[in-house]
Length: 382
Image 1 (cartoon, one colour):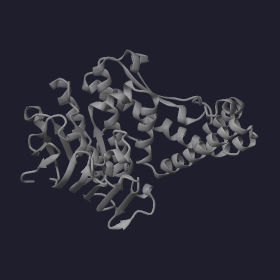
Image 2 (image 1 turned 180 degrees about the horizontal axis):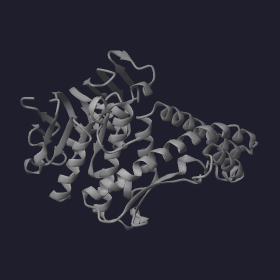
Image 3 (image 1 turned 45 degrees about the horizontal axis):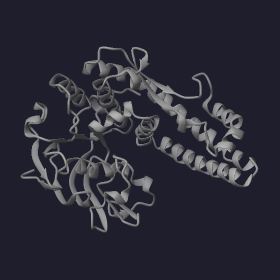
């Protein structure tokens, strides 16, 4: 795996493009109908007018859930019975995607006019990567944020990882249910142990894939941080109870057996990759605790760059870049360097949101410029 520079020659990737977008009653967006230029667009609007909501609606076509962690029913505009997001796409396996969710939580997804047999079949229908100031939580937040980052990055780049993750989560839920049953009714631990082979098998697959990704990403992570302006020595590492020299499947199986009685008392599975972390260090110290706000921002942007490069290298498709005021509070020099790294991903479509006209980076002045106010998008001529 090579991360950070676009393939060249015959290996050049295809760029995913959002050709048309329809949004109905999604947060404060009552009605959006837009035809997007192939290179992308800059959307200008003051804070609270709907820029982030529009980015969230587009990103929903990748994950089929909110990139901001909101529940589906909380995405529905006040007073509306449901929301609907649909798009026509270019450079992707499916050319049309549509998602609707009602207040009862019923979700319908169609691809090229037909219902998706499983929701997982529609994941990554529109490949995209979202950059926003909230990404600082990837560095300063808890381990769950970083595990989610790893899982999304790898699951949408490798079907085998997605399947292992699905199987692991199912076995984990069943073992935890057996643990709760043992706590309530004094059930035998055999019911708990029954799920451990699956946890070890699929958990081992997750650990191996995560290790491989971190090993490949470590050098580009450090190089990108330096290119943006970080003077310290950054490092990326996978933090796990499974030692580097151990076979992950065997190690997880042994941990589950060793901690079974403790887990029964706690009613929760305490060992496995759902407890691991993606560690970041600066000059040998935990970046989460010693890094400044600017250093956290730099590392978070680099993680998103690596996410986009991973998808491009694994699938041959460069994702749409959704830039939700990502340069807020960054000086012009750092912004220029980040834009250079974005350009190095290769040609693609960028949707850039900024609060004011004078905050549009020079590199994006060639793009069409739209405005948004009170949830209404004014596109002008595309």
